[in-house]
Length: 226
Ligand SMILES: *[C@@H]1O[C@H](CO)[C@@H](O)[C@H](O)[C@H]1NC(C)=O
Ligand SMILES: *[C@@H]1O[C@H](CO)[C@@H](O)[C@H](O)[C@H]1NC(C)=O
Image 1 (cartoon, rainbow, N blue to C red):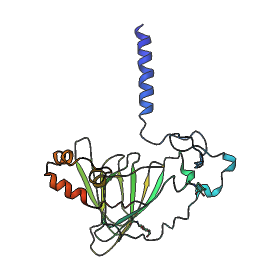
Image 2: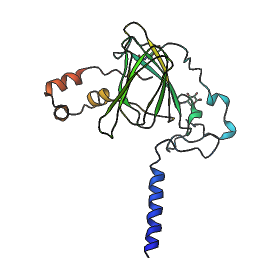
Image 3: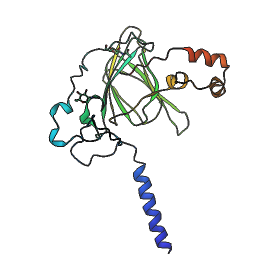
Image 4: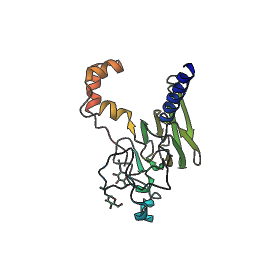
């Protein structure tokens, strides 16, 4: 009797730990090119028939060598994300890529990727980066990066990048461990949600007057993601 309970417990634990795997599911075939015409909803996208797969399914003339415009948004940065929506062949492969341009004193404001760890390389300029941990609680780790440096932002943690140079732009390339990492920008999500979170809720959370919350909610929260 006891041993069958033990077996059951082991099976349940195995199932639970399998489900807790914190990355995109591993592919069970060479590829599963997204069929964007399918109306079936699955985790990710339905696979196109492998016989119909073309080289273009794995290609995008993304012009990632070209600087992006960082002047038309308030935060002074521009994220060009190449995910499964841009390259259907990325479906199920658990990876994506971004070019990030920073104006002098521009920043990619505090945000999290719910589904991906990020590894970033500075190609040009300098970058002050940081993230906050959940355990130990709210420990801030930060560093100033120079050209050629590489930094890792663990999955789900709030992080940012800031160009401290008042004269020169910065360029970085980042890889993310999801075909669709998602980005939740903290200020936009908290003060720019639609509809708005009630101001008394935020006043208590941030320990400020409701007027301060109303002022923050009245700002235009720029989205720097493309
Ligand atoms: C679906 O993919 C095809 C080929 O890649 C593309 O031409 C088309 O615009 C896409 N449609 C949608 C709705 O994304
Ligand atoms: C990012 O740059 C592109 C090309 O330079 C531009 O079309 C786009 O509006 C910019 N996006 C933001 C959010 O500033």
